[in-house]
Length: 324
Image 1 (cartoon, rainbow, N blue to C red):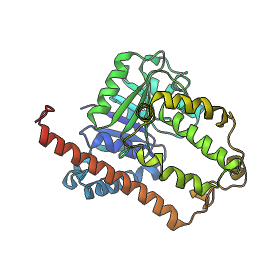
Image 2 (image 1 turned 45 degrees about the vertical axis):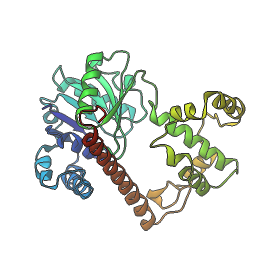
Image 3 (image 1 turned 135 degrees about the vertical axis):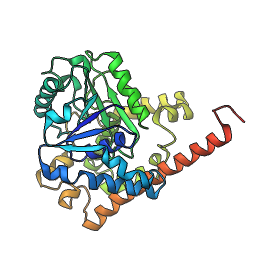
């Protein structure tokens, strides 16, 4: 088993640790503050219990999984013997650069250093290190123990064998890794996601519709199809000649601003930050924010449970993959 170190016990770290610990790997979680470390195992326990309700985890295995997770405020202890280190600290380039320089100094020469940044350049994050051939991006999506995708990002300096090793490790622990062959800001999924958000906010800026209508339109149209029909397959389905004709007409009318939405800027300047302030594009209460969070988790659990059941039925029907 490979030894994994997760740096940061905030939003992403405990969920990432749970992924590896559930597949037998010992995990060290480092955080400078004991307060965050002290809550890690209870968060992981709660997530595993909820997954067990949907037959996505074995309840009797939870104690063993938690035993594989070790907590430490000592960075050098977390790095000792680590095969792979995954950084999950706040999205601050200077902080990440300083951390990676320290990881480069503390970790064994064979350790692969990975960042969970969602948009930042991996090349820039590793700029102060010596062993840049061992630095990669591993962008997990929130919540990392439920969303399958991990974007594995290579830099020009990264050695292919290290990318292959991390890619294979992620497959072995049940994730769906994809190779990002160029270190571009936002990688793959977030570039598409924020292109959608830019157009959504532009529709609000221009008075085409209100914020609530944007979400209603997405949830009741192409949003329903996305788990089955990605944009490339969708284009092939409707016909590339039709797609070409639509793009030739509509693309000049889409938003292409390099600056954030004026409505988004105004909300931020007014302190209307969304869930955390109970007001953003929409108004929120404790009950409505809890309903959204719980609804998302339940949806993901149900989706994964049905997917696992379908895979089991397929395996039962077709055996080793050959048609019955």
